[in-house]
Image (cartoon, rainbow, N blue to C red):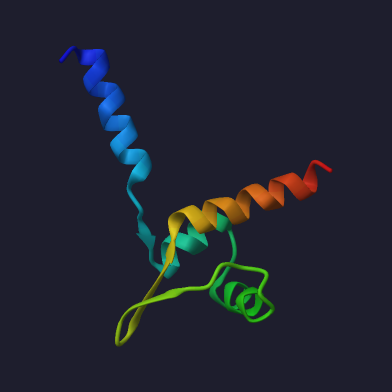
Length: 77
């Protein structure tokens, strides 16, 4: 397998990986604070969190990225 084929395979594999972001990571990514995020979740304007454990939650990175893209799309209308 050549270097270019290996790079292609790795990029395809990475594209199928799902990552879970914790709250601080989400805050940094979207530029909103905890209260704003939870307020938007209550009104269904922000992706729902998923339960990771008894005292841990996270968000699917793809869903957060899609939310950001939607904001950009709204701006560009």
